[in-house]
Amino acid sequence: MDIVYISDLKVDTVIGIYDWERRIRQTVSLDLEMAADISRAAASDHIDDALNYKAIGKRIIQYIEDSDFQLVETLAERVAQLVLEEFGVAWLKLRLSKPGALRGSRDVGVIIERGERT
Image 1: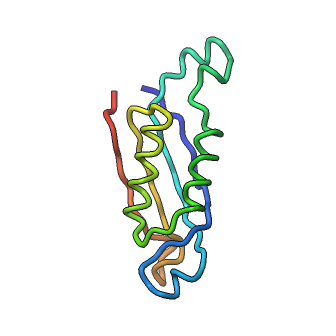
Image 2: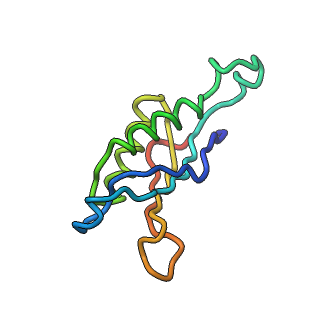
Image 3: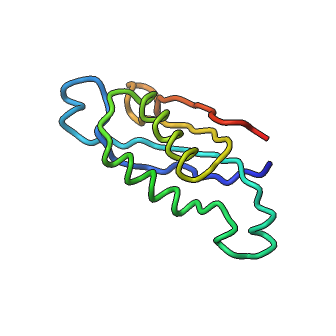
């Protein structure tokens, strides 16, 4: 199994449980690892044979910008399902963090794995 990844994708969205959080946009950061067999793309040197990280990134950005979840857990789960279903990824590991959410820490968040790792 090969891994295609996106690291530290920052997106502004409405996220949080407090009233003041519902009135502003906050930045979340996403790291995503996706299972992919890159051998066909490497042989052809053509994007049609690759897992297109740009298309995935653009779709994730649009989805997160339009969302308004209370919990990072919900946002992480929905983004994972989107990638699995819309891009045919068999396995992914997603880290979603909310920088500045806890005083004294750089960030807090969740790490989830979904699908079958082959």
